[in-house]
Image (spheres, rainbow, N blue to C red):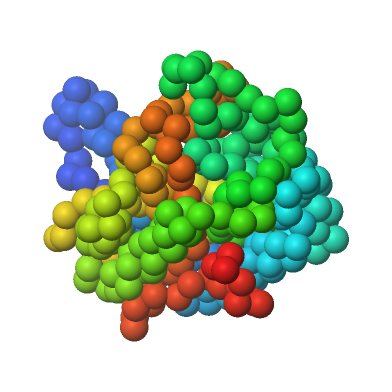
Length: 325
């Protein structure tokens, strides 16, 4: 359980004049005190905005960099494993071993019953693909039918997103990127490139005084100009000392809408882009989300922090391998 306390003196209201006023006064005073208790985190001296978004101290950036760097390094190191014939289970096992070797903790093992150190989403799987499970087929007689391959083995031409979140000294590092097994066609390469560039369009919009709507607009307008669609069913999120926190970072929107960005905000930007329509559905395992029309999907993700000057990316690839080509 998180220890929370207030950094502001308790406010006393005027003395009530009758018993009903006394009850109301006690209730109001208690609620005010409890709200103040939630404003400051003992571990970081951070505070909450009126939108419920935590503002971290400058000293907290170092913890996010350490966690983000480990997550990014692990994704660098698994790149040689992504080849035709490899299995998603083998890739996840390698990730689990690297997290353990670093003395870190996987944020996803045990999260809501999930039992893997990564999500691996192949082809038309938008997100939350389960390593080791047979890969969903793209082509079926009906889009409403759920058909899978016989196993989790990658084939030539598969594309996949690998998403890893680690905990280092209590800080969460969350990142994902695309990989290619074998050879792909030009249209698929374009999907990956547009998704990668859309992420950085969103990151360019991260600066104090801008809004979260502006981030979404930058991503959406770029993607749709390239005749692709942005997934609306999933979004980025705040993080820091917890896995998921406010705000929800939408990858579509309008400028000058949403909460205003302030220095010290930490969150992920992780656009999912489809070659076809934006709609998704979740399969029977309650995790795997696929494109409803079975079109290919791609995703890239960085964890970032807002600074006085703009944006600090916590999950940059140490080897410069964030893009798969």
